[in-house]
View 1 (cartoon, one colour):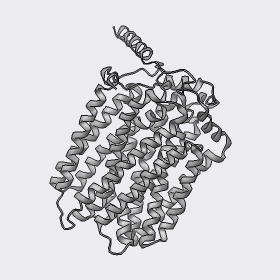
View 2 (spheres, one colour; view 1 turned 60 degrees about the vertical axis):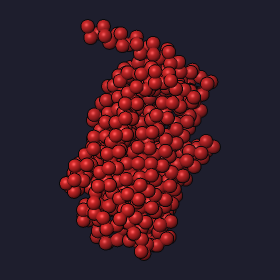
View 3 (cartoon, rainbow, N blue to C red; view 1 turned 180 degrees about the horizontal axis):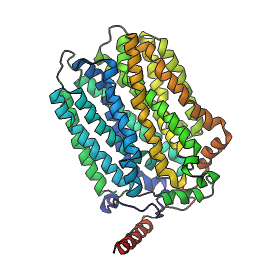
Length: 470
């Protein structure tokens, strides 16, 4: 661990440079992955708070359900702007490490802006601050998801990302629990002071974490590494790596599925408190926040269990099973009421658990040198979280009840269901997905990452760059 922090990695790496970091063994990848996994908790925590703020602002600022969805629109609308512009540029031109630090800085600035927004009691101000937070988290997600997928043995990529996303799910549990004891502590209190202090604490923490990333040694996995990994025979070599990005059709299919899935997931969680308070008699907002925390607990449990199942079954099989559960229980939640409705929607969150990270890892399968660019495309598809919740909000206002309006996310879940069906029943795709499970890279049977060798190559390229500048 001391070496991990003693040798600070640079903020810039050449993508045509082979570092062999994609050959990291499981043990060698643990420390950098552990540090990156903290980021997943951060945006899980922010997301959990967002779902409760949706309801809190309806009460304290006296706004409608549809208008409160502006928070989700600001938060997720920032994702494609970040991933497809400055986050993607920093990732490709500099490094994963630089992208992590940029995302944390934006996150901290957005959290600080909650203070003046609360003083002015401005919903527009909150939306602006949330947009900057979303920009930071979108930047982090642009780098963290592919980094978890490619840092370490390829055969465990789905398991790594699902485990990290399980930690993120713990953050989504902590957020509503904190909110129920802070934001809704007094149902007659319209003060926003508690919101100010919570986000000030978040800002301080993320700025400190950015400092930790600066002094850490983060192995850089370059496009050249990913291209070389594709050339290693052992079940992973396919013809797909020779295609241009626009012809990597499974990537675009995954992006479409991610758009529909994320929008529906955000809509369900964002209006969960509304759903239980309106369909379950005598349920207060504070109780609804606690029920949401319980449902997010189901979500976290589902991710840990899903990761466990992937050790014994092919990830695409587990993915199809869980997504089928989402469809079944979301359909049941539309018509269910009282405790039955609460149970159905909680089960939806349980089965949602592994869908996002698995769509991501399967979507970037076989992209080789296009991995970073492909990652930005899938992260950009998260804009679905800005599109579908407002549709649910408008529908809920129309019915004056969130229960029947839950058919809106159901429609988009069904559209996203095409991707798990495709990777399981379309043979060329199934073959590509399973090929990586047979890879020996990073398992100790193939070439092992040598840190000193990678560092020497990095210094050599740095010297070349200096001479070129002169």
